[in-house]
Length: 161
Image (cartoon, rainbow, N blue to C red):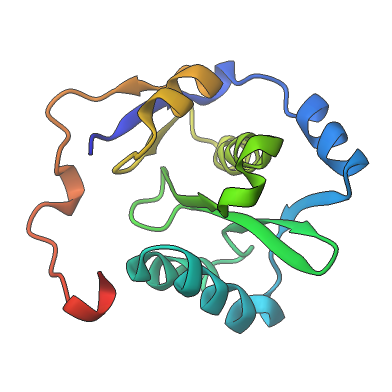
């Protein structure tokens, strides 16, 4: 999977998406430290096991580098930033039942906005899965010859796959 480049100074407005989700009872917010065990366990149950490792690193950052989507008391999705490299976004995941509600869009915009707030002009979406989603939502561009990129030579464990 290729890496993607996103211009942070040219992002679409997040307010309309966030307001619509709020009206549906979905909150997009930064995770807090005491939620670490709950969130990382949930990520490990719903997504590739390696993502929970990256999510754990997000809780070592100040402020916490994990944005979550919550409906009632249930997680819908998450997005980490600044984990593999300081300007990287990901992993980002939304459980299937919430994918048609723009939760992924809201998490993507919130994560990219966090990187913009830190002073970055560009962000890299590492090892991007749904390339068309990122292209359509934030104008992401494929970085040529970026596969496997930073992940070249990465150790893999059967327990993390």
